[in-house]
Length: 109
Length: 112
Image (tube, rainbow over all chains, first blue to last red):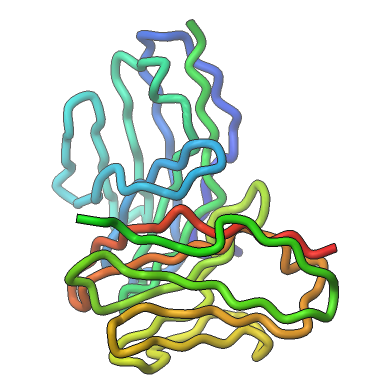
């Protein structure tokens, strides 16, 4: 079983809709979690860190449920520019990042 | 302030050859991590360098080796290239003890 698992998609969503991604992890010793965004043929870029208390950055909300070993990302009022691959990432110690396979999102005009 | 830089951007090699990829970290960063990203997959951790030593390593064979220099820049070497080594190689830099890693644009390696 992979340490970090996410639905690869693709998710095709109309502009303005709300979309949610989920991710599960198997290593209960996990310390920190993140969502990274990766555009086609580009490097991953940090979107946001994920905390148990939940955190929000504009249209983006991330949540961590340690009991269920589950992470989520919610994007409200989606824009065309949100089209990308979203990578769920865990830091299971010593700053070594473990990535999921990524979920591909396409926003349709 | 320059971000993480990598060279070359693209590289084509043949099976059995050796390759060296280079990374310069973000200013003020002392830790460099290398990742391999195959097509359609998430990045996979190769190894991490701090204070010129390999601090930890992922599940990659000894053909993959690296180095960190006193100025914190780093190299990734791959010997005896295989077709399966074709991938995007990403370098990420960070300040040790801080959780955020910043990625460079990557080097695309094609092994024929």
